[in-house]
Length: 318
Image (cartoon, rainbow, N blue to C red; front, side):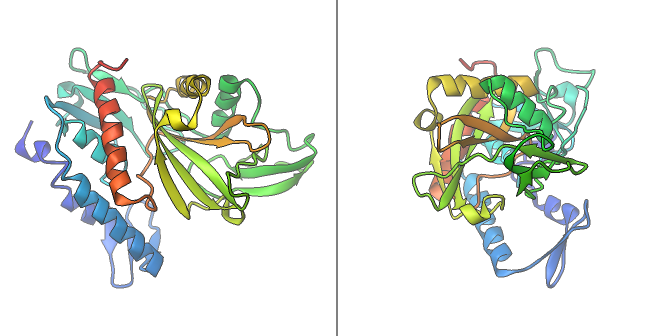
């Protein structure tokens, strides 16, 4: 491995200029063409991210190290795997054939990528079984894992339902009244009453999983009126055992196995009326930790995830 590759987790500066065009009033994402103006809220989020980014680089790497290769895309610093892999002792390999760990990484809803044909003996493959994180596929897997459905038929269901895009990370959900004619590219699911102890707020239980096991939970809290918006009023870090029962942890693991998710985050909702869990989203390229979480807990989460990722990558997980 070259010196450039071995220092890649630290020397990520060029990425910020390759992936973004920085203007006087905003930045443009080169891949999509999306323009993000420098609003006060955006500047606050960017500032919080860089505070975390530099603090995370102060976390000592675990040793002995191992090498990792991302394909077909290289993970960027704003994805959670970046600080976690670094803290776990990973260094970037120059190709799949020389890597101890090869991870499928493509920020897309559908990613039917095949594993490289030339691999190092004993190499660990991650997420190559996870080709579909569409909302309908997630709903089917949730039903299989928990034994009750999340999806509803909008033509026969009577009452409110959540309508949202099949595509991952759209954050375009809305409540509609059924029966209704289904819209192309949209899915329909039951309305989960995921209000927590405060009836004015909903709690999304973003659960980070590694090797089929929950490793930490971010309780993302926002007003009921903004339940479908990806902006949180408060975020709390918890160990999985503080949030879920042993049976629930097992069922979350069964969900990840059903969709082939070796590394990623799943959004779990607990219904206030009966305590049942529903998994409404899965992300194999999740970003984070959540911006609203305080910095000490962000670093704590990285250490928790790094320990679990290292054990999984090196084959020492229980």
